[in-house]
Image 1 (cartoon, chains in turn green, purple):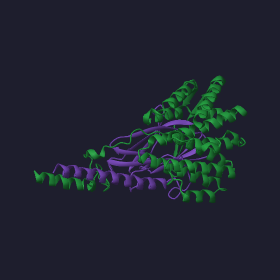
Image 2 (image 1 turned 45 degrees about the vertical axis):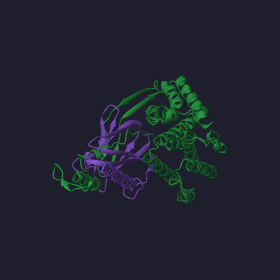
Image 3 (image 1 turned 60 degrees about the horizontal axis):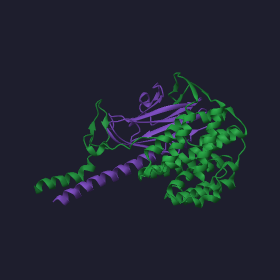
Image 4 (image 1 turned 45 degrees about the horizontal axis):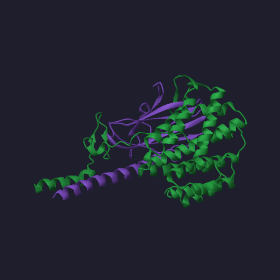
Length: 294
Length: 143
């Protein structure tokens, strides 16, 4: 019997080192990183994957439309201390990160630094200091006048934070940050549209139907202690209006340029939103955002 | 002896888990280089998310929206060689808009998007090259 245990012990120790070279079905050599396909240890799958487009893209749209910067739409930084729970901190980190991107794009340097400080405080509280460390701050401040670099630096920091959270089994926190960021971008866009209607902004709001479904899915999937229930219900109420938006999609074959490694999509998509529906959406977004920041 | 068995299995699982994490981290770094312009020529802004899957002969799939007026870059990696991952972009009706399988499993590809489109992105390992392991995908954009 002791012999069996000896073999098991040896096997267990070398199991992670079981990498061998072999040949694929068409004769290609399989890399030595290939794991034993029969090992049950390999059947780990990282659950569902969700994607929420960057809120910065909506800020970029607003700037491209020459819509003036409006600081009054941002979440004031002086109330940050009231966010005491991880739930509030994560949601509002998303909110502040969108505000940071918005002010950075409009080159509002002093506002931008203030929001950067708020983002840093919340990341510290959430244990994300590694992504928003001293090195990040130095790079950010050095590039204050270089808008493109600044956007890359901020996005990379959030990418690091997202990776860290997903790998430390804190996907619920990651989900809340993404949700807060998305709501804030929709709030800014819809309020600016109320102030000065723009067909492009209305279209961008309508384009969020799929993203809203993803936001609801991600909050439902990672709903620790059912903390997200009220927020999910509010978002489902919002979804009721989004489902009334009409889409007319026409497929056309894309054009691929193999030399430059680029594919141009050639489809058509028409979006039709009734004014009453748009008003309902704007009101609902305002209410949800108010609940998040209060 | 039972303790020895439990200990042995614990060591095995811990080593594997630690390897997987290191493996994934290395892959994530390599994948990020496709967005930052070192390997590709253009600088793309990350969407702030890291799409990770531990694949074992399965496909990972997710939906996202490409906004009109932007150019996107999808980058994928699953190890030291560039061609482990097959990724496919489809519209919601299931029409294939692009697959890197037709491009020798190119590790990144750009998409010029004149009009907004919701898409499904499907990722799998090329089973002739790698049958299981960590796969990372990143999405970058520029206006």
